[in-house]
Each structure stands twice: as structure tokens, then as C-alpha cells.
Image 1: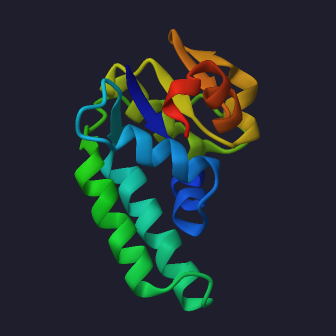
Image 2: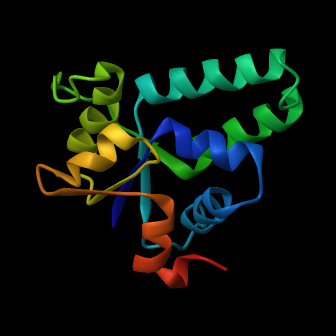
Length: 141
């Protein structure tokens, strides 16, 4: 299964040991049959947000750096070739859809209400981490 995480799921995983972290850890396992994809746009947004959280002393530089290294090892990079204009209320969310289309993803995991309202895009499911945990309980502790 091919999966794209929204930036907010990565941030949640970096900040605590909760559900997003558990899902990320399970999907990052080397022998997993789940594949995580990320684009450079998502990568840059994630890096910027972690740096901002570091300046606010919400996350340490070493924790953020280690997390980014884990992401780079766990996720496969894909570069979207198609620019989308789908989420009118927040066009910045389109980068998640672009990555998912490029990766030929089966699922997007997000906490973003605008994306969740879509439910599906081009046959790609869009779910909250809690929904993911119900759909694939074997992927959670």
C-alpha cells in the first residue's frame, strides 16, 4: 500500500509519542508492505515548520534533526508533474494531493479538515490517523 502523510501528521509524530508517531514508526519498518511517499514541497514545508517550532522552543534541534533523518530513510521521494487546484479554501493543501497522484498512492493520512472533507481524490482515500488505525489495526501497537 502506497501512503502519503500530510505535513500535520509528520509534525504530530515529531512532537509526541501518540498515534501519528506509532503509525509513522510502523510504516517506517524496513520489512513493511506499506510504502510512505513524500515530495520536496512537503519536505520543505515540514523542515520549515520544525525549524519554526525549534525557534519557539517547542522541539529541540536534535529531536527535529533526528526526526527528519528518520523521514528521509522511511519515505520515498516523488516529484509531482501535475499542478492541481482542488482545495479552494487552502490551495497550499494541493501539494499533498499532487504528491499522492505522483506516487500513485492508495491513501492520504491527514488531520486537515479541507482534505478530509474530500474523502477521496482520483480513487485515493483520504483518512484521519484515527481512521487509519481502525482500518489497519495490525499497523498500530
